[in-house]
Length: 110
Length: 113
Image (cartoon, rainbow over all chains, first blue to last red; front, side, top):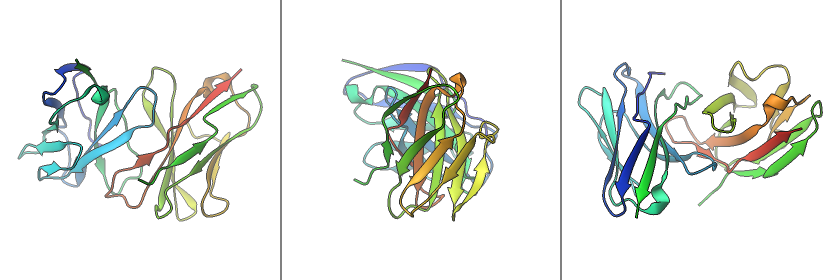
């Protein structure tokens, strides 16, 4: 799996968009970018994934740069419940395991 | 929304004892996983299981660990002789295909004393 780099922590005001960056400069052509989050000690929760195109679902949007070396997860209207550790993972769908890094601790402030 | 169910939520065991952690993956999922997270540390991959056999395992998954899908619905992780350092949250996950996200369970907190 390609290595990913994320800032260790970020703050966001409630109701504002949270933009979480991720660098994956060594990503290969068949590796997807996956985003998960972990709220306190709960099990990780899948958010979204993409290969080349930008993706949007009911939880978030994923913007991937044209060269695929970085991406941004966007939570459009952050709430206090979005306070969590967010993990960006580059993975090949042919590989079974996900490798979790340290992630970004997002604190949504009231 | 379908869930991955793990039992028990918390297990305390004596060092050297065997434990079995249980998981019920989502019914139409085909790929199953165990991960663990020692308190304050990263989520670590243990093992993946597909088509009734282990497809990948990490260095952590040594001879003390085994997995089984005994009846087509349950997926278990057995630790034969627990050590203090096995104390962790253990998460089960499943997915219907490798191009989809994983669904994780809420975990079993294992405390070895």
